[in-house]
Amino acid sequence: MGKKNLVPGELPKGIKSVEKLKSQLAFYEKVFSSLNAIVFVFDLSVNRMVWVNEGFRKILGYRKSTAVIPEQELIDVHHPDDRDFLHQMREFFRKNKTGTFTSLLKFKTANDEFIWLCSSATLFRRTADESVFEVVGVSLDFTKPLTYNRNLKLLSQEKLRELNADSLKRITNREKEILKYFANGLNAREISEKTGLSFHTVNNHRKNMLKKLELKNLAALVNFAVDNGLA
Image (cartoon, one colour):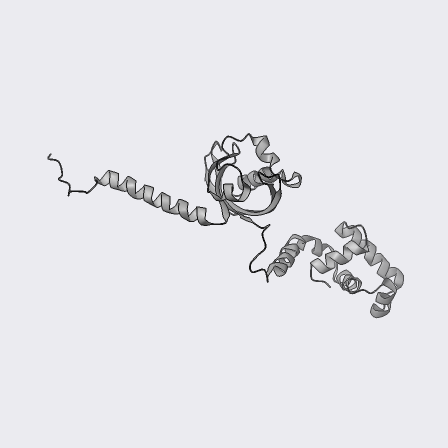
């Protein structure tokens, strides 16, 4: 077979495909690097960063790749309260082939300062034996002031209500009514007069709510009421 003649200056088809791919990769790398966010692919089977964008260096100050950082050192850069983060994420994706793991945690920068990161990750690739167990995700720096934060309080309240949904189910409608009165500044005797219940009954409802919600005192009970829109 004769060789196909090339137009002067034209690359062979295979080389053209490679060059096109390189160009696309360079473009996406530029897009990801322009974001004020950390975009990453992480292998949970060995706790190793497979790929991370330039945001990792810009936001946290560490070198761009964490592939050579030992697992314990990687865990140590999380706040002590969040050092089970990788374990929790791994367990989530072992049980869920779909879905998103979202977390708000503190991460130590190269300057030994802690910043808040909001991270969302989804399963990217997993082999049957979990020798490859990768997630792809993005982390946003929540430490900096929000440019538009009008809905932050509403979001916080909504998420608190979701977290406390099971706790709210433990208390009766009558207890919620009494809790609302407490949250609005009434004492047990005043609540007794408003509801027609005895002082002793109101106090029993208060004690029962503290026990059901595993709270220590009336102040904590009132805070719970405010957080969950019962005030």
